[in-house]
Structure formats: structure tokens, C-alpha cells
Amino acid sequence: MRKNKKDKGFVLIDDRVVNPKGKKSKPKNMEKGKFDLINQLIWVIPGLFFVCIFSYFSIFIVFKYGLSANGANGLFILSFKNIVNLFTEPTHEFPIALRNTLIYVLVSVPISLLIALWTAKALSNVLSKRAFAFFQSAFFLPYVTSALAVAMAFSILFSTSDTSLLTQLLAKLGLSRVDWKEPKNAMIMLIIYGVWKMLPFKIIMFTAAFLRVDKRLYQAASIDGVPRWQQFWKISVPQIMPVIIYMITTGIIGSFKFMPFGLFANYEEAVKSEAQTAVFFIFSRINSGSGSLPSYSTGGAASIVLMIIILIMTLCNRQLSKYLNKKYR
Image (cartoon, rainbow, N blue to C red; front, side, top):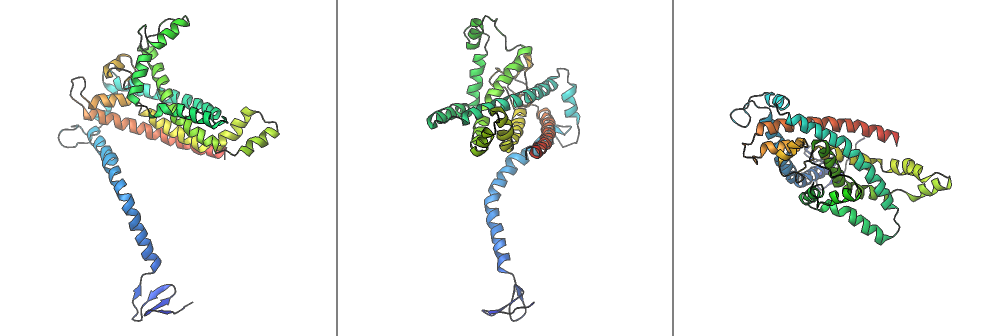
């Protein structure tokens, strides 16, 4: 179907603008779309530039040093020697660090998730606005506190001296003093510190999610005689499942990047307690704090191994997320 319409020397034919000489002109919506694309690129390019410089270029440097037989010196020669050396060195520092990191992730993430869910549910039931604001600020305050200051406070708290708070508390309970720097107790200290560190952000996120749940669902369940604990698992949890999945994902990734910096005076002290983590191992290899030369090849190789493990855990968590979304849809 053809419709001709004269408009300032042009003819409109089937939504195309054609001048009398037969030359086609681009539609106005196409020109507008190109302008919108350029406008969007103006906003995106600066952020993309910083992402490329500080993320993708850093990943390139890690692979360059970690997968090169010459490390940071000389030409790049593809080799997996640095990765093999991580698991064959006599001290076995990296396997122990990897083991500690996996234990930390598998224990601290579920514990912190359950505690945060219970605390957030209790906090969302507070009716007084002043009390709610006070408790919300009290739970969120540790999140904005300096991580190094918190680690130093925990280091003093878990000190084996007679003046430490925890030692005095154990003495009042009639228990003997615990040396938290021993290998059998060091991981317990790391897990306690990590759980406490992860709680504030999770509590705030879960509290906001619980407050968005429709109250009429709880009223209908109460009329039907459903107990409160069943309301929590059958109403609250399915309604906030996207937030739970998000907290699990970020918790796993953040736990793999955990470093007990401040709990120990240096990396050698953490190794003595067999409490070093993978990120702490990488940090020790690229920083010559103990007087030794930095080893960028070893640090790069360890970073690649950790990156692969995080990727595998993320893919497994994605499958878990699909299952939970399907179950609680």
C-alpha cells in the first residue's frame, strides 16, 4: 500500500522520506536512535575506561606473570610451572591456605546467613520507630567501621594475656585460658571474626526485604492457624528468596577474598598458626615485608587458581539459585 504525501519538497512513501529526485532520506526514528546511542555511550565510556584499566588490565597482568616461565622478567613463555610449584613446594603453604579458605567459606557463610535472617526478622517486628532506628544503626555501625581497627580489636580480644576480656570471661566461667593462636584454635578465631564482620550488611539487607513483605499474608496465615515458625519458612523466606540468593553469592565471593590482616602481626605469624588464607598468601608474595624479594609469578599463579575456584563456586551457586527460584516461585 503506497501513500504519497508532500512535505517541504519531500514525499513520504511507505514510511520512507523520498525527495522528488528519487534520493532516499533516513527516517527520523533512525536518526533519533543513533542520537540516543551516542548519548548513552557518552555516559558509559568513562566508567568502561576505568573498568578496563583497573580490572581487565589487572587480570591481563596476573595471567602474564602467572603463566610465564620467566615470571615478570624477560619475554612471555607460556608455562604452568608456577601453578605446579604452588602445590609441590616443601612448605605446602598454598595448599594449607587454600584449605583454610574453603573451610572458612563453607562454615562462615551459612552461619552468618542464618544469624542474619533470624536477627533481621526480629528487627522487622519491632513496632516502635525509635527502637527500630536505634537497633538498625547499632547493627549497621560495625559495617562502616575501619576493617583494620576491627581486626586489631579482635586481636586484643583473643589475646592470651590475663588482661584480655575473653580470658577474664573464661576465668569467671571456671574455664581455662585458650591459646587462640594455636593451629587447632586459629580457624575458630577466623570464623568468629568473619561471621561478625559479615553480619551488619546482611542484617540491613534482610531487614529491608522483610519490611517489603505484604502483611496481609501473615494475617491470612494467622487466621488459618499457621504457627509463626511455619509463617517464616512458608511466607517470609519465599518472598525474600532473591535477596537470599544475592547474599549467598556475594558472601561466597567475599569470603574467598578474606584476609586476616590485623589478627596476626604478619604473615609468618599466621603461617605458624596455620591460619593463612589464599589472599593472605598472595599478599605476602607480592609484598616484600619480610625482607625477601617479591614474587609476582607466584602471586599471579595463586591468583589464577583462586579465580578458577571462585568461578566454579559461582557456577555451582548459579545452579543452586535456579533450583531455589523454581522451588519457591
